[in-house]
Amino acid sequence: MFHVGDSGSLFYIILKGSVGVFILLPSPEDSNKFELKEVNVLKAGNSFGELALLNDNAKRTATIIAKEDCMFAVMEKHHFKTILGA
Image (cartoon, rainbow, N blue to C red):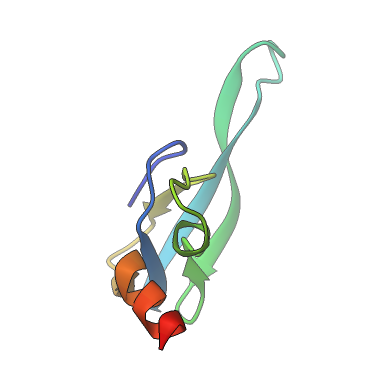
């Protein structure tokens, strides 16, 4: 879906399937290196990407990888701001 450090402009609600949430953690072998580690699994009914709607120029803080076929409801930042402004 997206990677740590990507620019964000979309918010996702999982309608079907599941995704893994991965963050950068220090490597057990070398504390100067970082590895992506799965820290959570989100399933239907969960959401992610909300920081992209709340912060201008927000960078993604996690990598999201689909674990199976998924279906999402997606909201773009400008729609979110229009709804809040109304």
